[in-house]
Amino acid sequence: MRLITALAQMVFVVALNAQGTWSWDAGVCPSNTNWYGYCSAGTCPGDITRGYWVNNWRVYACDRGSLAYPGPGSEVYLNWTATDFTVFLSAGVDVKSIFANNRCTFIWQSGSLTLRDPANNNAPGTFTNQGLVQVVGSYSRGLLGLLVNNGTLVQQAGNTFFRRRHFAEHGHIRSARWRALSQLRYQPHPEQ
Image (cartoon, rainbow, N blue to C red; front, side):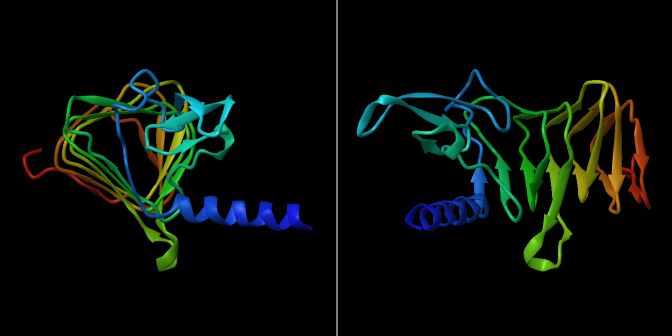
């Protein structure tokens, strides 16, 4: 019974950890830029026989499976300012919002971006890009929410499906291969 209670508490804590505000720290694992990537941080405090792990969200754990990542309701800031940096996405993400500053290169290979606010009846969330978003790989990927592009968006391969929401363009687009699964409301930059 204690084991079941302990496991239930651990799942609850990890779920709470997934919400809140998250900031990308490109200096933690510079050789692993994957959204769900991690790297070694030495030995586990209190147990030198185990490894210690960290991810680019500055979460440390003695067990790689215990590393927390942004989840539903999270506000994500890709706002590292020391140098230009890259964030690579090859799996699904479900968060409230993403803000990518002008130093960020966000490489979206595969997986869906679900931007929603579970605390507000799943109202649409927003991905605000001020840097460079590169859509790569011959995959189909989906976006639920609002994409506000104030930077550069390059669709190099594959298709991007917008689900239920819209896209606001204030930057530069190259080679768009987008499909609306329902109503796509496109707001072009006034100069286009």
